[in-house]
Length: 467
Image 1: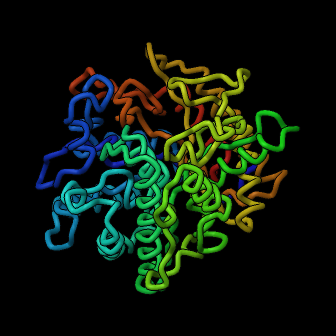
Image 2: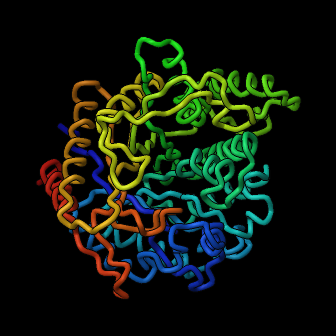
Image 3: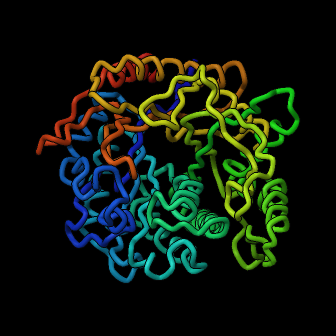
């Protein structure tokens, strides 16, 4: 069912698990700042301690070994390595921490997939304009080159930026993620553009300076739901579903994998709404400059984060103020037959992943695909015997197998989100995605495997080579 070299993994990110927010000269990140502002996060919670993985890495490693993972996806804290965001000052204790993590993984025959940026921009760079500033691309490239130079001799899989869509929209349009800006209909497109510029610079730096010796692969992790029309016989609903895919996955995948530019459908929709609402400036969707490294072709594999699906109906131009919602002119609908887990947005739709994988194969020239995040949320009373999550993973992994064996999708790996319960951004600790439960009421932050973790370990054992 799965190729012999299939990557069986789990994923985490630095801010969500590490804690140690002021330890050993670490600089502040925008999430440190955001969480300490009243009313930003559920229950005024924060990641100051989180899972304390900065102190309890060996405990995490034991969890990784218990699952039998072949791969582990982690992210580096930019502010832990470079406290002011630049290479002028390197925090050697941060370097030592990540060296130990990578070395320990390799000693246990676990391959690291390393993400350079998972939402936690150094606050010092936010103070200089953050992702809205064109100069951020060069600063990110400097950081990336530092990481390639420092860790790249042992890392074969790199992710530059995790979910640029979420960083742009939730952080700069909706204001519910750091840095908490609500600049409707404008800033998110600029942020997304600068993230693509930063990614492309880093990819070209790796390609020209490190690839020959280190023999690694570099991509960026793109999140997307699967979208399909509410009424399959309605052409307006079908067009709306196509717009949703263009504004979510296409926004970043089209420039990297198809044309080197944004989807025509996306630009047309944005410019049409600008005209309708009397916005007289230049297009709100930036244009790529010939002075920047080309973005086309800057991914060695397709990294996909998938959680849920939506039915889509046409918006019919009801929005009267500039915003991304206005530009998309579409309404997302949950099919009542889909169960919802943990959080209101997370409908359980495993077959949507198969459809999205087929779409990626057909649209982006059949790339190698790693599913870099996929998971099931639990909220409310703790259930270590998490039967629903067990069924979710069973169904989802079956859909991935169908995508490989029946649809011919080149899926190379699957990473569950997450290794353990952690700080889930604006939801704080109220939502649990882990294969291991973390008892945040216990000063020891005890990890206990869920039944779903035990099932996942059995699945890996069944398909892992040599087992």
